[in-house]
Amino acid sequence: MDDLAAQLADRRAQGLYRQRQIITGAHGVRVQMGQQSLLSFCSNDYLGLASEPRIVNAFCVAATRYGVGSGASHLITGHNHAHHALEEELAEFVGAPRVLLFSTGYMANLGVVTALAKRHGTVFEDKLNHASLIDAARLSNANVQRYPHADVDRLTALVTASDGDKLITTDAVFSMDGDLAPLEDLAALAAQHQAWLLVDDAHGLGVLGPEGRGSLADCGIAIKPPTILMGTLGKAFGVFGAFVAGSHELIETLIQQARTYIYTTALPPAVAEAARASLKIVQTEIWRRQHLFALVEHFVDGARNLGLRLADSQTPIQPVIFGDAKRALAASEYLRDQGILVTAIRPPTVPRDTARLRITFSAAHEIAHVDRLLDALSRLPVTP
Ligand SMILES: *Cc1c(COP(=O)(O)O)cnc(C)c1O
Image (cartoon, rainbow, N blue to C red; front, side, top):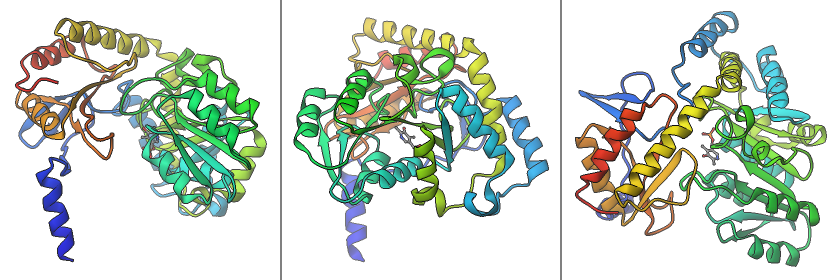
């Protein structure tokens, strides 16, 4: 028991201690923390929909109609008309035969991977995959092979050398780096070796592709075997929940076998109705994506002029790498004193010696907000 205190002290000494910040208002580009109102550049609310009044209203109307709780899991009596309608609309949106809702993206990844990867099979993981994909592979009884980030040659060698069932998993937009997976190459490799390909598009859905249909649509890759899409509703959609899109047989298999689908309470129907309202906005309000990418471009140009070293990202995720965790923390604290909120991301969320400020943009930001951020970055007391 004394070990816990010692471990916590050790974490603190290394600059790795994590603390929660208490937000007292609604989520937006301005967040209220105690007495301070901060300009935030660290949410995943890419389209500025988390507090959108039309979505909030859809949620309230549905809560009045359906109540707050779903009451049971989907396979008992929790599967409401609202969930079903959302599944059908999402399937049409992403261009897949079927969609299955999950409560969170974390659970969706666990559900798909454990349903498809069995003993004697192998799950291949990009080294920078999201923790939920890594945990999912660990939870399955399959072998796990991690390949160097986006290294298709190395992955090809690993896949070629392995026997049994194969499942390749990847983030589409890497969550802490903002770069894109080589999806065309991965899809071709998967098809050639009869391996499944699970694409986690938590940060691409709503942001990339025509009408925000996501990274696969952006690359023109169809959602049919071997390709499976996992999308989340808590990021660009501004709501909560997640889904898996794939063939009819895949979805039926998940309904039979995905334990994170079967043994958990269904999302509240009001959340599903909020997501339906969000989907309409995601599809029709193209200006949100146009404005978002104009902000990103403005930032990248400005950061280059300042001589800041940015990662190779064209998405709204723009990390500034400091390496040392304490320096990243010091930078984050300096920005906070300037009224700007950008959290420092440290190991083990990112690899050792790659601690960073993970700057993200939202369609709710204005160009003037980006200028304020650039101005503060130009005066950082610690250099990246
Ligand atoms: C956020 C995230 C998830 C988890 O989604 P939740 O719905 O928040 O559980 C999964 N994968 C990636 C890449 C993510 O960024």
